[in-house]
Length: 143
Image (cartoon, rainbow, N blue to C red):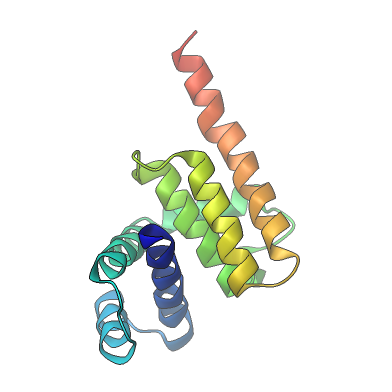
């Protein structure tokens, strides 16, 4: 539950950054100051995700663009875009988190915070990135 809550926090802060245009430190400070933080550890996990996503945003967005050619990045729902960024950050920079967990958690975020179509969309995009970018590399390593 701690990591799930941390992902929710990260999603809300990334949304705040996109909508209000705050820099990452100000967004984290604002969220912490005005919202009731029930679990410091969840907030710290969320903070690490936010910092990671912001630091690697260009690379993460390049994956999203490559795997959503019918949907230009700027046309994607802000929530879906940030859910994808969080999951992709976990894929590439959090080796302690299994890929299937990142995908499942992203789908759960979409169910809670986005549209009815979003869970299937998120699942499809992440599944393709996993199969084409990660699973194929793993196969090459073991040949």
